[in-house]
Image (cartoon, rainbow, N blue to C red; front, top):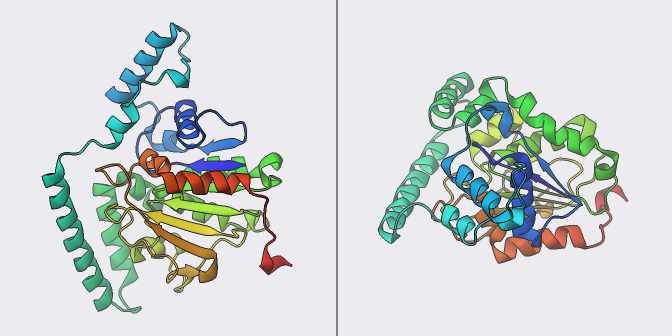
Length: 300
């Protein structure tokens, strides 16, 4: 069984997004996958993007359907790649790399200069303003009372007896979805839920301030969710969300966490579809749902 948890922003309709993710990873629909879809909590009723409208119209034209449910297989060739690689030429990419390197250096200097006695209330207010302005989905999740509603779709899936009893059970989370997953999997209700492999893509959980918000100031290292047997964190070095792609020094037990850096085929460096389309990521996901479940050494 495989559960997807998407990231921030307006998404394709749930059925379209689910089908597209299955197609990227497995080549077509799979009956043993689920999608935890929370985009409608913040973006319900917003009109679809121009790209989504084009994609839907093209499918309708190709399939000859008029019922609003065209087949996913009719998606135009190359459109995924076009969407994933929007963002400019090599000169712009080089400039982006330079800016990210400079930002990382400033972030590291800031972290090195602070201590555990820093005024948390001031830091919290600063990040509230930053997220509400620059990344409103993150601000809504942490500060505007939407977190519970955004976590509920994943809870509903994990409460399904067929999912809870599945062996193996794997979860693939992206971006803010990694924070959603961390919170849900850490809840007492799911302490005994065994997740054979949790894969996080483009995760911000390694950034100290996000870790502090996600764990409510939990001491470093913060505990990984108790039911997770294996955690693999995957990041593009230029992913602006995964500014700190190392998690083993911030979460534990470290021996259950693997870290993988790779370059995805997207100048955006954060696209979920580009992560999943990478050969090594796709192989890890397929392996996670294909191999027999392992025994948890901590429970035997």
